[in-house]
Amino acid sequence: MNKFELKALGLAGIVIIIFLFALLYNAYSRKINVPNCVPLSEQSTYFKNPGLKKVDDSTFDLYITAQMWAFIPSDVTVPKGSTVHIYITSKDVVHGFLIDRKAVNLMVIPGAINTATVKFDVAGNYHMTCHEYCGTGHQNMEGNIKVTE
Ligand code: CUA
Image 1 (tube, protein in one colour):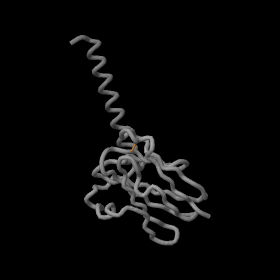
Image 2 (cartoon, rainbow, N blue to C red; image 1 turned 90 degrees about the vertical axis):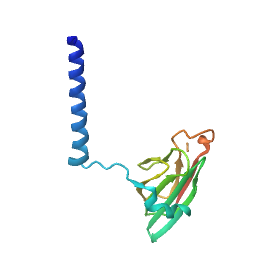
Image 3 (cartoon, rainbow, N blue to C red; image 1 turned 120 degrees about the vertical axis):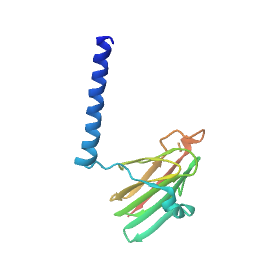
Image 4 (cartoon, protein in one colour; image 1 turned 60 degrees about the horizontal axis):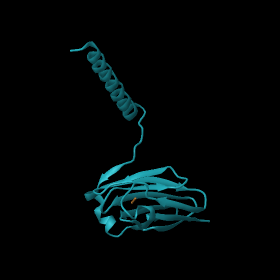
């Protein structure tokens, strides 16, 4: 084998080992939190009637179904100071889910549920957007979370 090929193979092997080490280090030592994914069958009953479910005065569970080309529900209202646990899945293709000014950026995958928890401390309108191209109506796939005083 050519000595340059051997060097390239060795280098590729070292890079793979570095990546594997970085992955395991971040997953176990730094406990990096990636969005959760729950099998759809475990919670499918909630998605037959998606919407906002009140847990207590400042805590809500929000079940969202994404489909071509809407979020159901697309308009949600919660009071200021609320903590919202979001559970989202897709009926058809892969969509995206992003909330403006909040650290929420999920993939929406048929057959799986992705989750995020958001606290809304400031009143206003928070735009939800599909950020994954999902067909000819993709640009219209949006919604709003209204946070009231
Ligand atoms: Cu749904 Cu783009």
